[in-house]
Amino acid sequence: MHKKVFQLLVDNTSGVLSRISGLFSRRGYNIESITAGVTADPRFTRITIVTSGDDEILDQIEKQVSKLVDVRDVKELKPDSSVYRELALIKVKAGSDQRQGVISIADIFRAKIIDVASDSLIVELTGNQDKIDAFINLLDGYEILELARTGIAGLGRGSENVTYL
Image 1 (cartoon, rainbow, N blue to C red):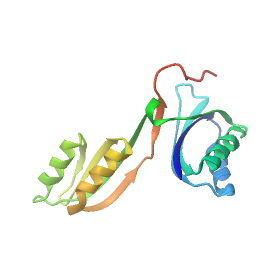
Image 2: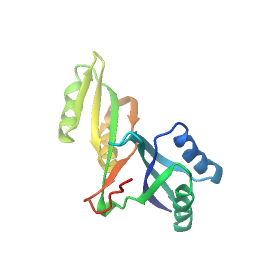
Image 3: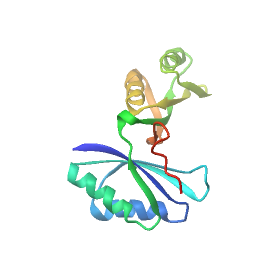
Image 4: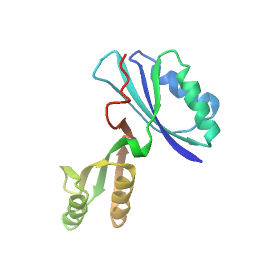
Protein backbone atom coordinates (compact mmCIF):
# COMPACT_ATOMS: atom_id res chain seq x y z
CA MET A 1 0.00 0.00 0.00
CA HIS A 2 1.30 3.39 -1.04
CA LYS A 3 -0.01 6.84 -0.24
CA LYS A 4 -0.39 9.51 -2.92
CA VAL A 5 -1.36 13.14 -2.82
CA PHE A 6 -3.35 14.37 -5.81
CA GLN A 7 -4.02 18.00 -6.60
CA LEU A 8 -7.12 18.67 -8.70
CA LEU A 9 -8.04 21.91 -10.38
CA VAL A 10 -11.79 21.88 -10.93
CA ASP A 11 -14.57 24.22 -12.00
CA ASN A 12 -15.97 26.10 -9.01
CA THR A 13 -19.52 24.76 -9.39
CA SER A 14 -22.00 23.30 -6.95
CA GLY A 15 -21.79 19.55 -6.50
CA VAL A 16 -18.25 19.11 -7.84
CA LEU A 17 -16.87 17.89 -4.51
CA SER A 18 -19.80 15.50 -4.17
CA ARG A 19 -19.17 14.04 -7.63
CA ILE A 20 -15.48 13.52 -6.87
CA SER A 21 -16.07 11.89 -3.49
CA GLY A 22 -18.88 9.83 -5.04
CA LEU A 23 -16.44 8.41 -7.58
CA PHE A 24 -14.22 7.24 -4.71
CA SER A 25 -17.07 5.65 -2.78
CA ARG A 26 -18.61 3.92 -5.82
CA ARG A 27 -15.31 2.25 -6.63
CA GLY A 28 -14.40 1.46 -3.03
CA TYR A 29 -11.39 3.79 -2.90
CA ASN A 30 -10.46 5.37 0.41
CA ILE A 31 -9.97 9.11 0.92
CA GLU A 32 -7.59 9.66 3.83
CA SER A 33 -7.79 13.44 3.58
CA ILE A 34 -9.53 15.97 1.34
CA THR A 35 -9.30 19.75 1.32
CA ALA A 36 -10.87 22.21 -1.07
CA GLY A 37 -10.79 25.95 -1.58
CA VAL A 38 -11.24 28.56 -4.26
CA THR A 39 -8.09 29.60 -6.16
CA ALA A 40 -6.88 33.09 -7.09
CA ASP A 41 -9.27 32.77 -10.03
CA PRO A 42 -12.78 32.40 -8.53
CA ARG A 43 -13.88 30.22 -11.46
CA PHE A 44 -11.74 27.35 -10.12
CA THR A 45 -11.33 25.34 -6.93
CA ARG A 46 -8.18 23.50 -5.89
CA ILE A 47 -8.80 20.14 -4.22
CA THR A 48 -6.07 18.14 -2.51
CA ILE A 49 -6.83 14.45 -1.95
CA VAL A 50 -4.69 11.98 -0.04
CA THR A 51 -5.47 8.37 -0.87
CA SER A 52 -3.78 5.01 -0.60
CA GLY A 53 -3.63 1.72 -2.45
CA ASP A 54 -1.33 -0.33 -4.61
CA ASP A 55 0.18 1.16 -7.78
CA GLU A 56 -2.58 -0.19 -10.00
CA ILE A 57 -5.36 1.28 -7.85
CA LEU A 58 -3.62 4.67 -7.56
CA ASP A 59 -3.14 4.85 -11.35
CA GLN A 60 -6.80 3.94 -11.82
CA ILE A 61 -7.88 6.67 -9.37
CA GLU A 62 -5.91 9.28 -11.29
CA LYS A 63 -7.40 8.18 -14.62
CA GLN A 64 -10.97 8.03 -13.32
CA VAL A 65 -10.79 11.44 -11.61
CA SER A 66 -9.34 13.08 -14.73
CA LYS A 67 -12.35 11.88 -16.76
CA LEU A 68 -14.87 13.79 -14.62
CA VAL A 69 -16.49 16.72 -16.45
CA ASP A 70 -15.59 19.48 -13.96
CA VAL A 71 -11.96 18.38 -13.52
CA ARG A 72 -9.54 20.58 -15.47
CA ASP A 73 -6.21 19.20 -14.25
CA VAL A 74 -4.91 16.37 -12.04
CA LYS A 75 -1.35 16.23 -10.69
CA GLU A 76 0.41 14.02 -8.23
CA LEU A 77 2.17 16.09 -5.59
CA LYS A 78 5.34 14.15 -4.91
CA PRO A 79 6.93 14.74 -1.49
CA ASP A 80 10.35 15.77 -2.83
CA SER A 81 8.96 18.41 -5.21
CA SER A 82 5.99 19.73 -3.21
CA VAL A 83 5.10 21.54 -0.02
CA TYR A 84 2.40 20.05 2.23
CA ARG A 85 0.78 21.69 5.23
CA GLU A 86 -2.00 20.80 7.61
CA LEU A 87 -3.73 22.83 10.31
CA ALA A 88 -4.74 21.31 13.63
CA LEU A 89 -6.81 22.85 16.42
CA ILE A 90 -6.39 20.95 19.68
CA LYS A 91 -8.39 21.64 22.83
CA VAL A 92 -6.45 20.38 25.84
CA LYS A 93 -7.79 20.08 29.36
CA ALA A 94 -5.39 22.16 31.44
CA GLY A 95 -6.11 23.84 34.73
CA SER A 96 -3.84 26.52 36.08
CA ASP A 97 -1.41 23.86 37.38
CA GLN A 98 -1.02 22.16 33.95
CA ARG A 99 -1.22 25.19 31.68
CA GLN A 100 2.51 26.00 31.63
CA GLY A 101 3.40 22.44 30.56
CA VAL A 102 1.10 22.63 27.53
CA ILE A 103 2.40 26.10 26.66
CA SER A 104 6.00 24.83 26.83
CA ILE A 105 5.25 21.97 24.42
CA ALA A 106 3.43 24.41 22.11
CA ASP A 107 6.41 26.78 22.13
CA ILE A 108 8.78 23.98 21.05
CA PHE A 109 6.56 23.30 18.02
CA ARG A 110 5.95 26.99 17.27
CA ALA A 111 2.26 26.45 17.91
CA LYS A 112 -0.04 29.25 19.04
CA ILE A 113 -2.33 29.31 22.03
CA ILE A 114 -5.46 30.84 20.52
CA ASP A 115 -7.92 30.42 23.40
CA VAL A 116 -7.56 30.15 27.16
CA ALA A 117 -10.39 29.11 29.46
CA SER A 118 -10.24 28.32 33.17
CA ASP A 119 -9.94 24.60 32.49
CA SER A 120 -8.61 24.30 28.92
CA LEU A 121 -6.45 25.72 26.14
CA ILE A 122 -6.89 25.63 22.37
CA VAL A 123 -3.66 25.21 20.46
CA GLU A 124 -3.27 26.01 16.76
CA LEU A 125 -0.51 24.13 14.95
CA THR A 126 0.47 24.22 11.29
CA GLY A 127 2.95 21.89 9.66
CA ASN A 128 3.35 18.57 7.94
CA GLN A 129 1.49 15.51 9.23
CA ASP A 130 4.55 14.16 11.05
CA LYS A 131 4.94 17.39 13.02
CA ILE A 132 1.29 17.38 14.07
CA ASP A 133 1.41 13.69 14.99
CA ALA A 134 4.56 14.28 17.08
CA PHE A 135 2.90 17.20 18.89
CA ILE A 136 -0.18 15.11 19.68
CA ASN A 137 2.03 12.27 20.94
CA LEU A 138 3.80 14.66 23.33
CA LEU A 139 0.42 15.61 24.80
CA ASP A 140 0.11 12.02 26.05
CA GLY A 141 0.00 13.10 29.70
CA TYR A 142 -2.81 15.58 29.02
CA GLU A 143 -6.44 15.00 28.15
CA ILE A 144 -7.29 16.08 24.60
CA LEU A 145 -10.90 17.25 24.76
CA GLU A 146 -11.36 17.95 21.05
CA LEU A 147 -9.22 17.74 17.94
CA ALA A 148 -9.85 19.15 14.46
CA ARG A 149 -7.45 18.56 11.56
CA THR A 150 -7.89 20.10 8.13
CA GLY A 151 -6.12 17.49 6.07
CA ILE A 152 -3.27 18.24 3.71
CA ALA A 153 -3.15 21.28 1.48
CA GLY A 154 -0.25 21.28 -0.94
CA LEU A 155 1.41 22.93 -3.90
CA GLY A 156 4.22 21.87 -6.19
CA ARG A 157 7.51 23.73 -5.81
CA GLY A 158 8.62 26.22 -8.45
CA SER A 159 6.71 27.63 -11.39
CA GLU A 160 7.36 25.05 -14.10
CA ASN A 161 4.30 22.90 -13.35
CA VAL A 162 1.71 25.65 -12.90
CA THR A 163 -1.50 25.05 -14.83
CA TYR A 164 -2.87 28.09 -16.65
CA LEU A 165 -6.48 27.90 -17.79
